[in-house]
Image 1: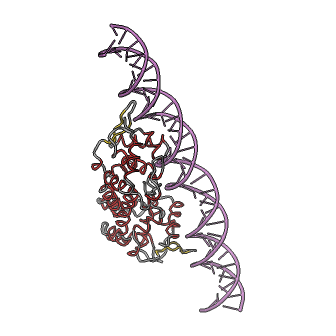
Image 2 (image 1 turned 90 degrees about the vertical axis):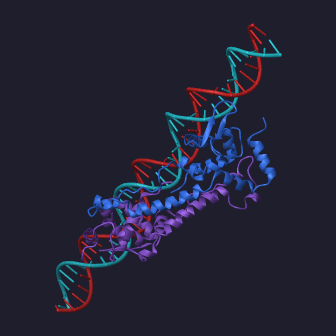
Image 3 (image 1 turned 120 degrees about the vertical axis):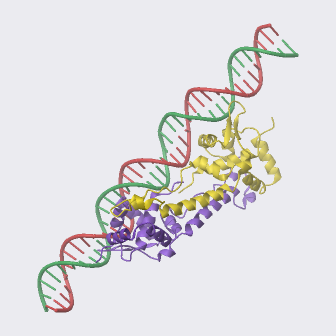
Length: 159
Length: 159
DNA sequence: GTATCCATACTCGGATAGTGGTTGTCCGAGTTGCTGGGG
DNA sequence: CCCCAGCAACTCGGACAACCACTATCCGAGTATGGATAC
């Protein structure tokens, strides 16, 4: 029930990309976040496969968001990294064993599975309500404008 | 981000225990759920450590719920098995790297961590609202009374 | 001066090892209930 | 008939391996850039 560390990295990268217009390379983002460059590359590839970012090949290439940051939710990023498989998967225990229920009695989902699914839906809803733009605005509000400018300049120096 | 299979087993065991008054052994529950007896024993020990069930030693021993089934939530069981550690753990990426934010600017939690925490809180709330009794009632409503009686008799034969 | 070609450096992408946690298993310590014998 | 001691069977509890997913890393394929060259 642990969320992959790559999710945190991917979220930070998406927020960073939301403040820039030109491509940013995976190496640059790895330096920014101070994490393994190779492994971060893997996460960015996952985001690319999910269609959240686009890769730009060649010199001065990198990654760019495919949509406006307000159109990308935290849930999108989480699912892109973790995969769409639900956390809980019912194995139909009620049908097993010497006193298992018959398939006719199990036309509906198991109440346990329903409860777990409801919890996961609540989780997804909460994450869907927050966008990458929201995160960027909140993060910008906590640091001084000078540092913000320095960060942007470091991330994307003038041509 | 996958929930341990032991959670499902533990929930089924708790529901079964909620319908009975005498102790039920781990072996019996393993036979009922048709899972590895040794590993299920491990999960039951976790429930015992968490204070949800009590072990009764000796012949005709087993496990009994410590509280009324309406006082035990699904969340209690999940946390007992998975542990209380939150799914998402912030590693303060914003403070790292050459353009990291200063500790003074990070007095408050990272917005990303806040968003993930909010999602987890929503999940926990949903799971807290469902009790073991609720599950038992719902499951009983889906099977015939005859089968229910057969199950109870198999689980706990008359002395 | 301009257009073209080429070499270079930089980018992503997928295939390849290492490690921690979940899954699965085993045997020992302790307790209860039964049984047999004695009073 | 009642009580007690001993035995046996059953229970949980923690310590010990096996497997899988996450973590981490590497090298190859492809492309835009910049400069050198020919016209």
